[in-house]
Image (cartoon, rainbow, N blue to C red; front, side, top):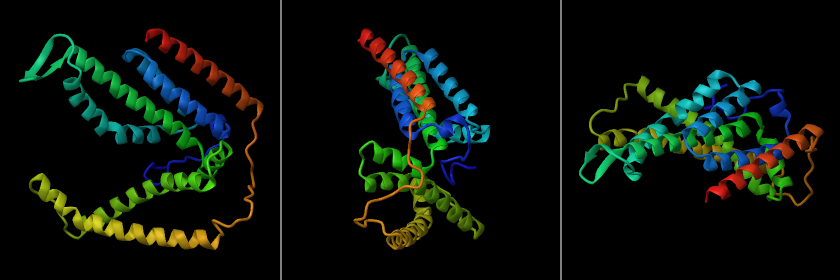
Length: 257
């Protein structure tokens, strides 16, 4: 399944069946590890570990490659610009006050690997947790239901709007639409596409509002769930391991400060 259409990939693996609250805690510990681990070696190990974890959950290589493609532009920007902001060591290339150094390149590589690790850590939650389960987890953690539902809709409709943009762009291209020239002219050429996307997005939001109103969203009655969240033995075990790993990371990070 393409990430453009939806984030969630249905499955019955151990990671799919893990309690969403435990996975939220795992994301917190993983992001903390991404920021705390020094050097590119531990960052590469964390990134490879996330690939193995997602593969063990049945996530296909095609989905993993889609994450890489979506992160490619950000990684390139980091690798090109970050060395200018972290000049350290001998200069390799210099343009006036701007210069590339070995220390700056090392910092850029570490930052790019950190961004990739965070993307795959977040993907571990979104790819293996259905939107209703994620909303239930957030509500059980104390978040108001309407807020959790808003987050769920955002995660669901951002890929939908992206798919709509691609469909409108392809339809315009089939009708002979071509963008050429300098950057400003090309941006202006996308104006008809953006207008069509905005109009269709407003239409979808109106239909969604009517559908939610028909289902009684906002009623004062107490909400019930068909499948409530319950912590199992596996969930408690993974939670304990994640908490232990988080404690080790915090102690090691504090020792280096």
